[in-house]
Length: 61
Image 1 (cartoon, rainbow, N blue to C red):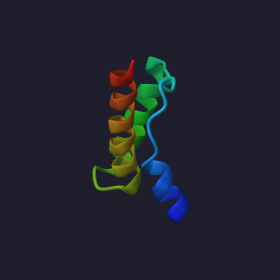
Image 2 (cartoon, helix red, strand yellow; image 1 turned 45 degrees about the horizontal axis):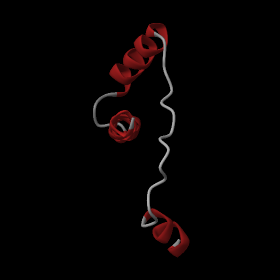
Image 3 (cartoon, rainbow, N blue to C red; image 1 turned 180 degrees about the vertical axis):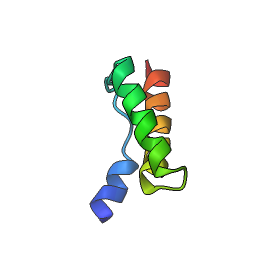
Image 4 (tube, one colour; image 1 turned 90 degrees about the vertical axis):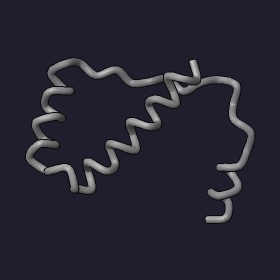
């Protein structure tokens, strides 16, 4: 665990990771599935975090 924490403090790489693109059909399917799970599901919370990461990748470019 200590290694993980130290790695998080390492200087950022000069290259940005690629952002994965999703087609509209996939996004619609995800939206439908999330509607069924509800806003308090663990999956919805994880996807919110993923959204933050995607925004960071976009800002890196």
